[in-house]
Image (cartoon, rainbow, N blue to C red; front, side, top):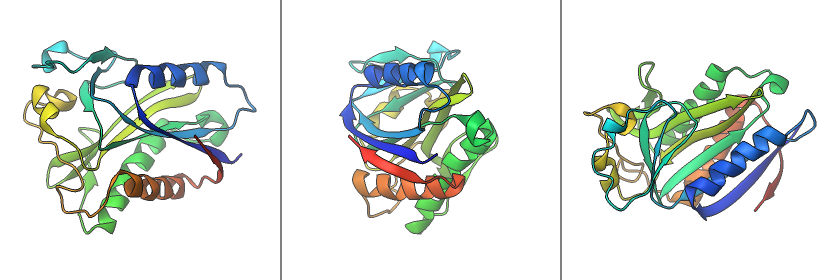
Amino acid sequence: MPIRIRNLGLTDYEPVWRNMQSFTDTRDADTPDEIWFTEHRPVFTLGVNANRSHLLAPGDIPVVQIDRGGQVTYHGPGQVLIYPLLDLRRAGIGVRQLVTALEQSAVALAKEFGIPAASRCDAPGVYADGVKFASVGLRIRRGASFHGMALNVAMDLEPFGRINPCGFSDLAVTDLVALGARTDVNDARERLLAKFLEQLGLDVEESAA
């Protein structure tokens, strides 16, 4: 079944999260899969079992406790969020396969800009020279996925200094432009979508707002 692509633009985090939950809880066997893209206004998100001690100095940035795995991360303008809302059982896709597809799509995207990148088995996400530029966090419910991956493209990285990113006190964070890529959010989004669809062998049905 072809997949639908939705570009949501710049959004507040919580309404998009609630809409992902609703989509997942109300979908049935005939509901087409969707991939949502967005940028979020500044927010820190904490995974379901996150330790709040990793939230060092949030200041005026809102904090939202959510239902994905993992610890704390930051979302803000200049970062591409890809949210694959997929019926994994119907597609025959395992959770590890989906995580790998997200990570490897970011690796392949970085490679297009001459940036050597890799995932790590001990800490999900994508790294260049040990510095993280993409984070992965998923939730599976009723055999379907939501949440996804945050790809840092060209953003203010200062808020990452207010947390222990993903629970690591010594983890450095960067973005594609700082690594030398000549790109922006729109370009990176289109390239990332192509890489991700290729990883999973998915077909696009239509794009929607």
